[in-house]
Image 1: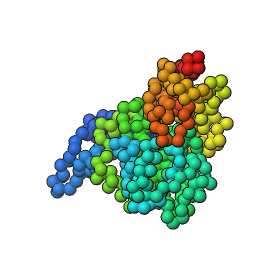
Image 2: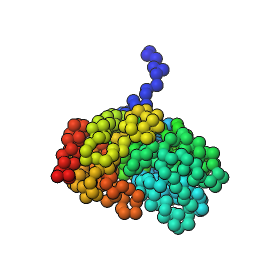
Image 3: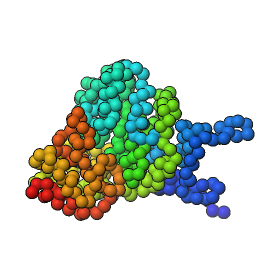
Image 4: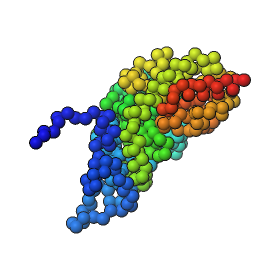
Length: 386
């Protein structure tokens, strides 16, 4: 008889195998899609699983949540039908009049949601410049602040906030810290290990990686009453991620480590090539040693930095738009974290009310040949400036 090994497989292996999934009845190594909207109780009229109706979840969704919890080092993870629905659940569960601190510039959808809740008298909102711990400390109100929101790296300028330091500030004021590290997924940044109470990711992005799912996920270190409240918001709003999307998400996460490694490598090559380019005013990428957030980003991503960057283009706003129009390999599309490279003029997408540089182009670097990406940007810049 052969004894089992005492070695625990690495996180890479566990995620690649979707936690060594094996379907008990057939031996299938790929989870099945469970599309049921309702579930029969057993002979004692007891529920068979923690879900008995679609709004509670499903076997497929629970498997995807288990993989993400493993990635995050979380006690529990909860999947939603979109990143915005996950963020809204956090905001919605706050008591009326709760004080929230968030970056002045962040993902425009969440910022608009926070501002709407403030305008309706649901919350009080204070802001700080992303990465500025002094402003963050000044914005919190000891004993009154309920939630501190940190987005790092910050979209679309990619400023870096020290999560451990932000956690100390938040906890010192009696608040919880939520981090949005969508630009550096949990195989790069494990925010809960750095002191965050809630880790949010738009699973649409790197976790899925194939631009065919919209999903959001929240993960926590402790499943206390506030977590139960958030779970109830999801249940009542019916925003659970459905089975087919959960299945696609599991599929995507199996290659997460390979995809992100290649994306980071490509991004570094692109950033270095264009750092001193005559048609570019500035490259915003924490992986560059010249970036003010470089050292913190290096510590928080194990030196991989992610695949997101922005260019401030020289010339006019139309010049920047023309660069996106003339790209032939980059797709002129919104989103990030997929295997394909995307480029967008951020002001056009986020609207006039959002504080973003008019000549900023946001780039999501995919896993294509880096030389092709560099050549494509070169020819687009040349055409836009001719």
